[in-house]
Length: 582
Image 1 (cartoon, helix red, strand yellow):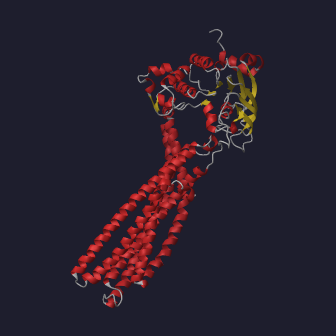
Image 2: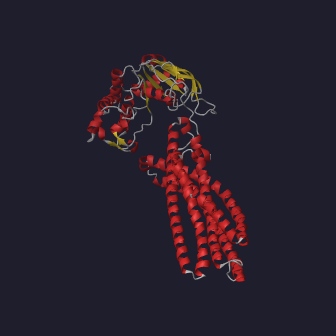
């Protein structure tokens, strides 16, 4: 897992190496300083040698300045490396999610993906910065300081070694209990983001039904769960500090006791035993050793927190798209003919009942096909197989005489324009949204597409026309206007197949008729598939498909279905009742 995530370091590998190098140099300077101090006390101050004090003092200042410079450079490079790593990791995750098929996306909640790209990556970024700086500094400081203290007095240095196993055992117990709690906390963050996103997207519904209190209660329940779990985990991690303080003060006490006795015994003469300067150095090394242990405990805590985040990020990166382009893929769609050959489809391979059951359907290139059926009859599922948003479970779907699984995905989806049941506009101008269909479209091409979609009229009525800014989600335009903009966007692709999945439901019948008339006159060679709830929207289609519970009940023209299909006739009469009188 760690090896896979480290691939995202890439161009920041250089600064990731520089940071530990400068940290090591900083540590060397910090370990040398107490030795210089001991020499200054024993040979300069105690001996009253002023020239030696000045000379050694300058060396001490130089060592301190070098330590400061090395530390500043280490901090700079560590910050650059961790921020760059997080940038690349976030980019890699986002790019990987873009390659997901619908079935892959269905495995992750929207809130879960947002949490992984924000909170989880921030945790990993902080952990990485601590690893390349603190996790290098602390062991180096521990080893060098311990080596220096052993050189001064190996007997007193045994005190440090006695406390290290105690500290290690305590940290292991804390981590083993805290990690499962952090995993649960991040799953709760997923739910929290989901609730917030759902509330903000549906804020108009919330307010119209006066359900603010219900939403606040739902948010409060998850917030309380996060608070309780996080508090529990932090209480466990809080044992790090008392454990470290016990080790620090225990070492200080024992070294003070035995060191003072050793100094008194030899009269402060280094030749006879422990000198005053050496004891002072030992105190400094005690603080350095124990502070390095404290740093390691901080790194340890950060790694415990980030480990759960790393697993969640790796889960996203490891997820392989269920739908990919094959080798030697077909890169040209000859025409818009479509054939469903004994197609059976399940969203879940373990599902007992298929969503589509042995569907056989043939559509000639340039035909207009209407699809009717009740709610849950799998109309949307049927058309989503055409651009290969999902793969069939059994049978095959062909476009232009070629199985869709043999096409290059980009080629296939460029040839199929899909106006989804749930229309989505993005923040930006109307031109920005239209250019999703063709980023190189001219103003004339955009106007022509909008005229076909009956959108040019209301766009021209805006003060800024085609430069009108669309709010996120298209909240500043009506449902019908949003649908027409989405149709125009699809037309700009110049597709061979155009699929309208109930995409004129918010448009009045007169405008709906004008759109269909424009399609017949302006794009006769494009295969048009129209899913509709209104019979009037598909009456003039070349063939109408009647679906029910994933099965094709009948296929024919309006007049043919009126004569032989009781279901179609019943729907027509119920919708058109009173039409003759009008």
